Length: 211
Image (cartoon, rainbow, N blue to C red; front, side):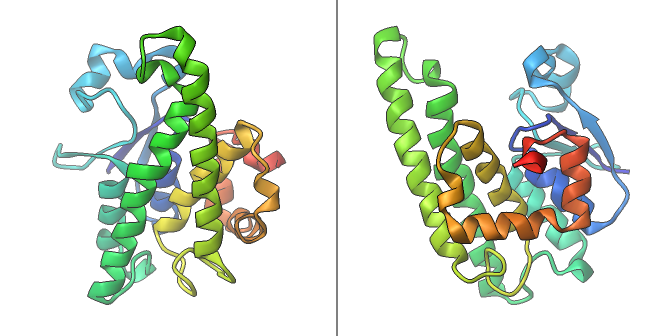
C-alpha cells in the first residue's frame, strides 16, 4: 500500500488528511523534523530534498510536494469527489493549491525560519515581522475566498480544504488574530466536524483540537 511520510504539525498534514478522506489503504510513517529525521540517509533515499510530505507508491515511485500528492489523491479516488469533475474546476483547484504552496507557505517560512533569508542576525527581526504581516494578509485573502462557503471552492469539499487548514493552525501558533477571520474560523469548525479530519488531527496531536 502507499506510504505517506509526514511530520506532525508540518504542511504534510494536508496530504495526510486528503488520504484519510479518500478512504483507501495507506501507511502513515512519521518523520520527525524536530529530531532531524528528515536529514538521515535513510529518509534522503525517499526524498533527497529532505522535506515532507512524500508519498511512496506500491511500485516504488515517490511523489513529493503537497500540490502533486493532493492531485494524485483526487485523481486516484474520483468516486470521493475530492476534485471537481470539470476541467476548469480541476484547474481552479490546482491554482488554489499552487498559491497556498508558492505564496502562503513561504510567508510563514519568513516568520519561522528567518535565518534562511539572511546571514545578518540584525536583519532577522525585520524579516520575521514583515513575514508575519504578509502571512496574515494571505489568511485574510483565504477568509474572503471562503466567503459563505461552506468550502474553499464553494459547495464541494476538495483537496484544497485540508491544505488551507494547515495555515489556520500556523496562524494560531504564532498568535495571529485568526479568530477575527469569521469565514475562515467557521470553516475551520466545519473541518473539525469531519471524522477524517479529526482522526488525523488526533494522530498528529494538533493544537487545533483545543483551539
